[in-house]
View 1 (cartoon, one colour):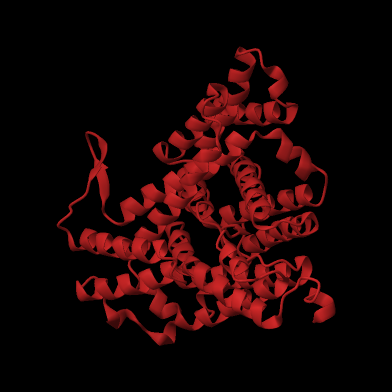
View 2 (cartoon, helix red, strand yellow):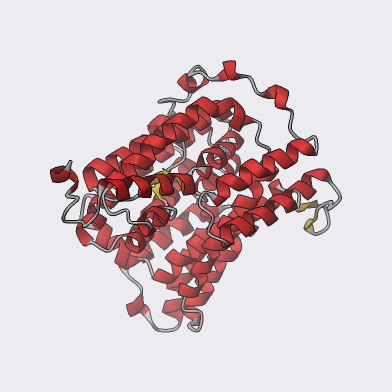
Length: 422
């Protein structure tokens, strides 16, 4: 173990690494519940969605720990799961089986990039302002979904959206749970999201919104998961929708993983290995039946308490497995209890707007289009497309063509071609 994980040179101990792994898991464990709720919106059975989330996270963490020796927890990404369900399936018309094929294909492309010099070329080609805008746009999108799930905003025939019924028990529980979530998170309570979901579920039960009779432990089985494991369908691989979804998803996972790993890791060697593992993990996500995994920002919790090696990731990964026993309990958690987590996570993601050069209109306006149109068009793909098309056009109009790379022009052209053909 000492030789494999190089514990001594990392100036750490097995105890520190184990504590870091436990901390990371507690911080990120809410994803099991939240991701399953998103996958269910795409048509994947809830039990199977929980299984897919757990198994994919476990495998990703194992590969990260043993191969990259990095304290990074891999799990299905927030925002990307919304893209999977709402954009790829509900908006673009792909079945969830075809969407899983898109995840698998994107993972293959991601791997080709990660294992070649293309990673550096692509990183330099796309402006930082657009990368950050994607994160911010996803943050607003998650917030909007959370507000909808919680009943805080509802549809309107005249104004498209309006304030929901604040006297409705469903909405009242959302506000109570949101208050608890914000307090716990702001006080840096370990596992604040998971704890708020538990407390919120109890409050929902007190309001009569949860039927405890629905808890049937006989439901714990691999039966429903068999229909999801390896269920990828490539029937639409010749369609434009399939490749637009693949292109857009690849863009998101390539840059989101790149940004997260740059922020979490300080060692170039570990970054390169971790980036490759992230790509491989995305491929497994398509096989196991979930939206793509990412290097979770919650990994920072484990790193903060001393996690430096892959042991942290391995411990966190192993802790995902016992959650399989609680699938019937997880199934009764109402979506308005999950909504506050989406709102708070969204608020964290929009903080990246500080990294955009807002004083430069040629940088700010394309970023603004991405940020505004991802939630307002209810499409991550379309939001990204508008920003990527506007960027080179605006730069060229201002006579600043030297700030636009050929790969970026090519990407913009592909997005524009999609709009024309569709």
